Structures are given as C-alpha cells and as structure tokens.
Length: 401
Ligand SMILES: [Zn+2]
Image 1 (tube, helix red, strand yellow):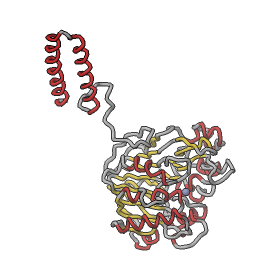
Image 2 (cartoon, protein in one colour; image 1 turned 45 degrees about the horizontal axis):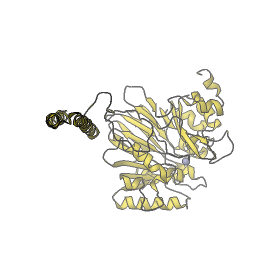
Image 3 (tube, protein in one colour; image 1 turned 30 degrees about the horizontal axis):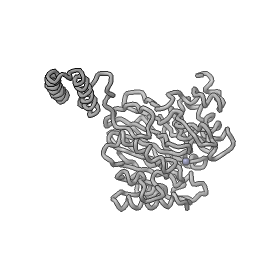
Image 4 (tube, helix red, strand yellow; image 1 turned 180 degrees about the vertical axis):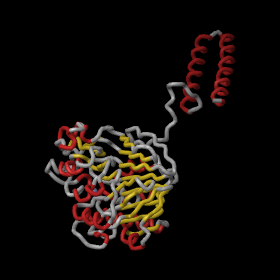
C-alpha cells in the first residue's frame, strides 16, 4: 500500500503543476480533460501492475491457474498427517486413469491419463500440491495407453510427466504383452528418467525385496500389494496391474487396483490380508469385468471413485456395459451409495464430454470425517441426471433415494 500512496502523491503533484500551467495559457478546460485522462490512465496502470487495491474489484490472491482449467478447485489445507487423494479429469473424451496423492509433503502419482493431451491438465492439478517439482513415488499400473499416455509422448520434443517432474522412485508392472508405439515411448521416457537418477523397480521386485511398505508421511504408509500376475503370464493385460493400499493412522485404508479384473481381484483377495477400506478406486473404470463380489465383500468400501468418461462407446456398444456398468453399480450398491464419477460423454459421435463429478478430491484429516469435494457436480452418482437417465436405481439405493 505504501507504494500505492507514493504513486498517488506523484500523480497528484504532477496534476497540480499541469493545472497551474493550463490557467496561464488559457486552454484550461482542454488541458484539465487531458489531466483527468492522465490520472485515470495512471491509476489503471497501477491497478494492472497490482500496486493499487480497489475493494471489490481486485480478485483475491490465488495460485496461478493453467489455461486448461475451467473449474474452481476447493482449497485444501494439509499437514503431515493429512491425506488428499485426487482423481483427475483428463481433458478429453477418452477413459483413463490418473490419481494424485498428497500425503503430508509426499507426492505420489498413480498413472498419467488417457492421451498425450492430458498432460497439461495433469500438470495444472499436480502443481497445486507439488511445489518442489518432485514426485516422490510414481506408480505405473499397467502398459495400456489410458494409463501411460501422459508418461509417453510420441515425440521426444514434447513434454511428458517424466520430463516435467523429477521422480524419486518409479514402481511399474512386472509383466506386459504390450508392443504398442505408446509403450515404446513409455520405455524410452522411463529410461531417460532412470538415467536422470530415478530409482526403478517393478512391483514384483518390490515384493521380492521384502520392503514393500513405504512410509509416506507421519502415520501414512503405502503397501505394494501382492498380485499373482506379477509372476504369471496372462492374455489379460489389465490383470498385470500394480495394486497398492494406503493406510493412514492405522485405521483408515485406501485401495487402488488399476484395471484389475475378475481373476486378478480373486488372487488379490487370496494373496493379501485386505482390510475394510474407506475408499476404493472403482476397478477398471467401473467395468462389469471388475468390482466383483469376491473383492467387495472383503473391502466393504465406504466411498468409491470411478475414473472414466461415462457412457462413451470406446469399448462397447452395449449401453448397460458402458462405464460405469450397471452390473458393477449393482454390486457396489450393496456396500455404499457414495459413488462418484469423473467425466461423462455428451456426444459419442463428436467425442465431446463434460464433467460429471469432475476432478474428485477425497480429503482425509485425522479425527475428521473424510470429505469428498468435486469440481463438477457435488452429487452422489445416484442423484445425477446422467444416472437417472441411463441407469437403473439398485434396490439398496431405493431407500436412501
Ligand atoms: Zn484403463
């Protein structure tokens, strides 16, 4: 404000001198108008430069936002015991995954979007939390494009996630059948990041090392779960997914299973002592092939977040099986109605989309109820217009409706 007052004084004194000259020359009115214009111009310049604060006119100080961002993200205050899990919108019509986790000061990224053009959207969101340019852990669940695209720009001149952030440790899939271009690009970028100093282990190597529980922050750990398909081949790439469980304060659990499907989920239950979970990232984008009773009956989730472009026809023409599939919804409904979905297709021919719940933040602070904050609709899935139009309300949700 001192700068502002000083600048005003200079402007006022200049104005007085100009007015005295004007009355001498007899062209007072014209010059007075010029002076007024000069003062207004100066004030506008000061306002634009940020030296002048006009109550009600200046926007409140906010972190800089990327051009790609259209929604206001809730302000999240966190300390070393807090956990914020963000399921990101990906900026296009395609289904894919990207989950960003803030555990105290520790930044964890699981997968990186559906297409290369997701990268600016992911960066804008990550940068709200990750202020030191370093992701402590990056988990790459499996080699499908909708999970690795953001790591794997086709051209070496374009920036992927590994170009934009320093990575502490990268944990990825042990096996793959992938031969795609995007997988080749992923391998190239991964190697660059390893050369730059990142530690790399496959999930199998992590399990075999015996050190598969990582301390992320005060009272917050991440366990790389065991999966039969870290060691055994399958035609189903999804079942190679790296799975992990985050525990906060001993009693809160958050489960991430990538695109694991029926067989993978069955082995996961058998090979790990899974707890009841507060949050489950809906399996395989809410596919009917995942979210089986075998897994759900063990983890009994309170909140389920599904990352997909709902009702797009990328994988099927069967509307009941488009993500999130009616079968999956019916199975999840036995345990919770707190289901949230990131994005929805608005036109499958033109590949247009909009936010359903948008980017979903799950905020867990000790001794406080876990909160869900969405940049899009704040409603549970069952209360959204999309659901009422295209899905059938499960029996279990009827009472609560
Ligand atoms: Zn996927």
